[in-house]
Length: 289
Image 1 (cartoon, rainbow, N blue to C red):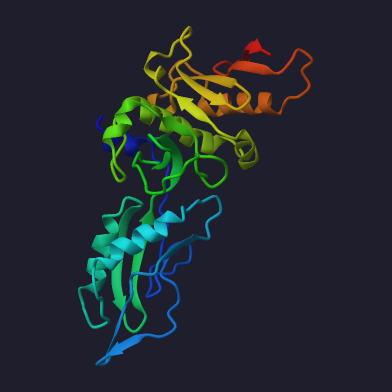
Image 2 (image 1 turned 135 degrees about the vertical axis):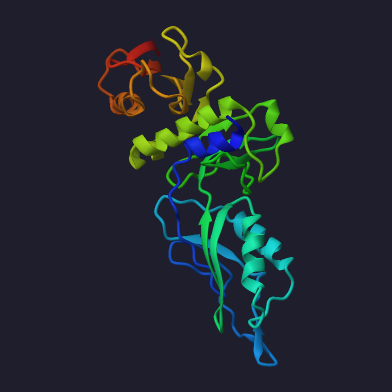
């Protein structure tokens, strides 16, 4: 299975409608170019400026890095002048947008006079991050490195985006390219599973999360497989990655329920747990403080 197929296999994204009109504004996730104080009319036509962009979201639990606005504006400005009487203007804008790593697809493009360009766009969603030499880059649910460099893990819309990769293979990757290793996609599938099965309250309280799936392929009764590292030196043994299926293992939703129960349980008199095996019906505390 190549990286694109793995990305499709673990992607949980739904279609998010985005409307881009003259000011590139929308009703859900939208790319916007700031309201113009005046339109530039030239011989009965007007110019559609593409160099002032902002990206906003009205969808709860969605994080849009501020750097995306500048990234989109810089790329669209390379198109030069777009005029209202140009029948190919919308097509050129759509093609340029589809080349951007944060844009999954542009499904419809139309020039609407005198309002500008209207497009139906699906954006990629930040669900995890990877460690680079100097900081962190966000990763989409289909394994694409996205713009938005940060010196610390960025938000995934609820909490900190979990760290899923930090190895030497990342040095060969650039923004817009896909993750290379199976273990990265295994870790990404765990991050998506975490978003699906943990409540927003629990996710927001987790703080930094690191998902080590380097041993996912070796998961067995004696091998913990995926290990999830939490704050306060805590580690949860997860077993197989969701991407690998659940044959012979506890369903992933029950694993997360086990973790939630122990994260919220403060009644123990034996000391807080440090290593928790959540692979079984009765989770096993392997180490306490």
